[in-house]
Amino acid sequence: MELRKDPITRSWVMTGDDAAEAKPSPESPCRFCADGAQVIAVSPNNPGAAWSARSVVHPNPLYHIEGEPGRCGDGIYDRMRSVGAHEVLIENPRHDRHLWNASDEEIGHFLRLAAERILDLKRDPRIKYVSLFKDYGKNAGQEFSHPTSQLTATMFVPRRVLYELRAGREYFVAKERCVFCDIVQQEERQALRVVEARGDYLAICPYAPRVPYETWILPRNHEASFERTGLNKPGLRVNLAALLRRTLQRVRTLTEEFHLVLHTSPSSLHPSKNLGYWKTIDDDYHWHIEILPVVGSKARSYTFKEVYYSPVSSETAVKQLREAKIEG
Ligand SMILES: [Zn+2]
Ligand SMILES: [Zn+2]
Ligand SMILES: [Zn+2]
Image (cartoon, rainbow, N blue to C red; front, side, top):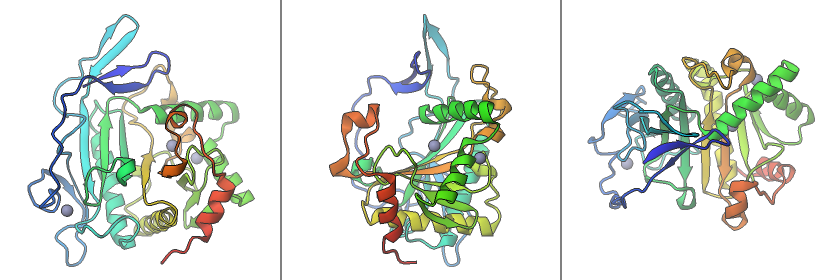
């Protein structure tokens, strides 16, 4: 597999003729419960548990930390090797403790571990961006039965984040304001699409959703970088953990399957000449978590990729999510 750059959108894709992969046999015993995995980082213990959240090397990584990217051009085209890192973040030692039913303290440990791993990987001068994501459910591409998220560190900025960075910068150039801050303010003022506000964080259904029940969690005050957000402050962490837990509970009353992705600022060690965003990145980008539920009967495979199709308005989605019966 290699990375190729689309010369039109300037986004990188992973492609190549992969040998058919041996599917890991049903996990018994679970590889993440057994102590065979190569542990990278561990977050502080919960009372009575050996660990609370930890990070391990992905058993079948898409990106490898060794080697040089070997960037090369072929006429108008660019390609490079998939150098980077691919980790599994084990959210909890227990199989039945998920981001929607674990304690806020446990979820907080996971969030802090994620922030620490992003900070650490961004210190590698080759790394431009660190993605944190979770796929839950068969149709969402879930890989492991153990409650896990994944993290990839890449030498390029992924497509969607690149679009957001470009758009954020253009908005900032025009208005000298952060577009995400303006969204937060308008949504709070209009209160049409706010799912819940909790401390410094807000959950909303975005005005132009890509999928039904799409929900974002953002800090109410401007901050470009999740990992710098002060997750070492227990108060902040607990509010974010509680809002994440409660939002996932709401979503799960409608569908169990979802994608979750964290969008944070790229590594500032890499000024990008062709984007120029580094000068104002701290002012014009604003970290957020996107939750994209997988609603099988309403998904449209082709339009989903080209022009996002969403047959549920955010105004309807927010009502159902607000009124969802949740536990805590
Ligand atoms: Zn396990
Ligand atoms: Zn902002
Ligand atoms: Zn985003």
